[in-house]
Image (tube, rainbow, N blue to C red; front, top):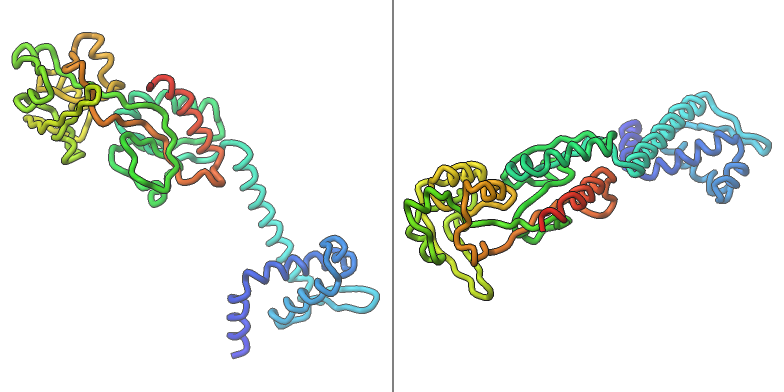
Length: 313
């Protein structure tokens, strides 16, 4: 019964016990309450009370005290060696944390949208690794909405209008989008002259957003027009929609970073050039908090902003 009580006492006092152990080790290393008290800037009686309380918790005497000296008991010497190892491990743990805060290093888990990640970020990440050789990057490409905390990511790149969130979001650029179609499609079906005309065309819709995928909005000055569109092809892949548009399957809204080369090469033509796809959206790098932000996460955030903000205006 007494042994069970003692175990329960140790469990309850774990948080306090570390302070008692530090006091015991300090006294044991100096073999003097007075010298240890001077080092700790406390009174000898304070240290004496802490060591006595530790002995009471353990149910054994650790140090023999006389007016002239302090010596170990047999169990005290054994306990001291273990406590010294514990405090050494704590110091090593502190050193690891300090080193991680001194420079970018360790595994960096990030999530990127598929098309944007492949077309714009893969090369940048290669340069990032070359710049920070102590960082190892695990990059996952997905268009689903990942949970940073639940899934253990250090950072994610997101596109759109961000909902209210506890995450820190740094804008890294504007996601310009164009309304486009192939020359062959427009030659066969005619060119829309207003947003309302799109209701009579084959439109290629992004299926991941059920409502926004078929309800398109456009802005010209202060005028905003919305139109419900339909078509024979829908996909959750912006790259698949891009390919379908180039092959004449219909009219599509496609991000500039995906389709700008095709427009320059004449494979796609902008439709309703006087109208802007609305609402405007942005690119963000998101992470959990600015407080105690790891250098590797901060370095990635700064790197993306530096490399992309000018390019994605």
